[in-house]
Figure (cartoon, one colour):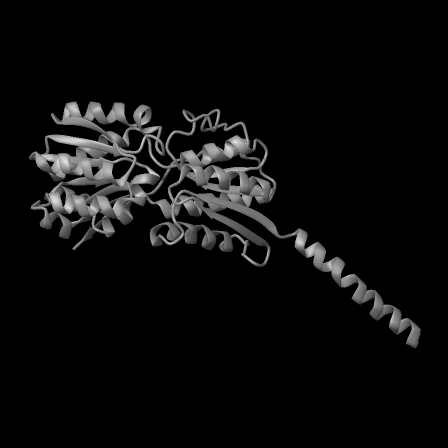
Amino acid sequence: MRRREFITLVGGAVAGRPLTAHAQQKRVHQIGVLTPFSGNDPGATSFLAALVQSLAHLGWTEGSNLRMHVRWAAGSLEQARRYAKELVGLQPDVILVDSTPQTAALQQETLTIPIIFVEVSDPVGSRFVASLSHPGGNITGFGNHEPSLAGRWLEMLVELAPNVRRVAAIFNSDTAPYVQSYYLPVFETAARTNKVEPITAIVRSAADIEAVMAQLGDEPNGGFVVMPDAFTFLHRGLIIVLAARGKIPGMYTLALIVREGGLIAYCPDIPDLYRRAAAYIDRTLRGAKPADLPVQMPVKFQMVVNAKTAKAIGLAIPPSVLVAADEVIE
């Protein structure tokens, strides 16, 4: 080969490298993630880990063909709105979002970027989708609870603690606005059926939580159900401590809270929702439209009971509960 030809080939190869690198860059897909939780919360990070692992199984790897932009709102609605605007400004290929207020914040910012939600209780009532089977817009995803579960939560609490005569539904109406229309009617009907007094306990601060738990502990036979809500999840440690101190039986809607000291939970497998959301992200990145992807509900549920907590507050777990439980923490 002539020297001039060799130089020409080498020069062309060198000149071509930036173009090749640029082409590879364009194949890196951008994913936004908006979560209401805190980035230093092991429970919340375990949900995101399930997503990342499932994306990897589907061929999407951070640093290779994928870049994730994660924003942790840490319970702040103002922060959620700010992060929603920031993520939309990045123009990602798709955004994963957890919980209702965060989904609403994103909906305010874009009607075009695909949004996949998890842990939204009433996507139709919240006007995120036209229907579960035909979402119709740029939003779809995975709900977390049917409204009928609110009755089941109360029934299971009464089965475990048959002396309960007053049950508070605890939630923050700012972060969980859907509770009053979606869950409370069923909750109140179940309360009447089980001859217990339903109490609507709206909490917006740690002080509110302390006041509600003090009220439940001051009179005998009180209990509570913590409704699906990012705010109460963030304050779960306080609720667990106060329930133990007042010997108040409580039902939770996340299994990990029972593993951390709560009494009982009946709930979907939240990491499984994140894993299933990864499949929708994969399909979206390959060209599917959210309008054509039906909203799905949980397929895996679990009952978790903490026997140590039950003993500490003076409860004997009925055999029927032990048989039905998927996990009993000793």
